[in-house]
Length: 347
Image (cartoon, rainbow, N blue to C red; front, side, top):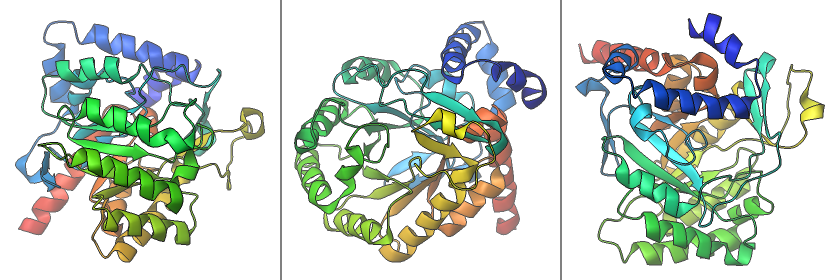
């Protein structure tokens, strides 16, 4: 029904506009008595054999919603009804900011992809924290944190520390986002010079906390192997627990859509990102010798995509563009396949 009826209607409109409208509709629908129960039965699959543990956290399943969808933690209760094992909110910055000029979100239908240049548009850490505090469910919640656009790189650590300190105790893990292509100079924070200083300062703050939530670093798919090695070495040296592979790409390889040049800059996600992400997951697993936990994201549309990432070395998998293209039943279908696969291996 979604692909044949709902998606064609949604895709008639500007993607950012329909994203906002969809949020409003979801909120309204979930206020209808018993609708939450009905939707959970339709879209959610829970089973003890799907549960997984990672870094002291217990996940209902291995599939999470990537950062960028619910930037402002507006739909945490509703998202839980669609069967995810975790959700990552953000990217969150200390101060609210509008992001880049519109239009800034585009569909590449023939490529089953998206291009965005949103630019960390968000409500700021204080407002987002208030929503996280009001969440009453039991999803694992990750906070994807970044720097404000006006903050120069030599002061970037202050922004990350500000978000970390305010959110500590209210989220289960943190993602240090240094790889979005849509904030000027941000990707330079992936370099050895900046990254070592950033993680050292964050670790000092973390050492002061009673509950020491795990850190993940989100990296770009456009890095060279030498750069990936340096990031892994820094992670191991500084006891950074994990890496998210990967963010969106600035490359435009072998795309079929005709509107690419007119769209311009931005990060590409969806099917074209799959092999880039998979290649980096495999390399991370081999080079780190399993010392770094990996969340794989990029080009996930079905259970085969998930299993491939897990086999290459990912511990968890996240989706975004695939969920938009495939619809709300996607997560249940994937979890059903994973459950059957696990039960077959247990017998």
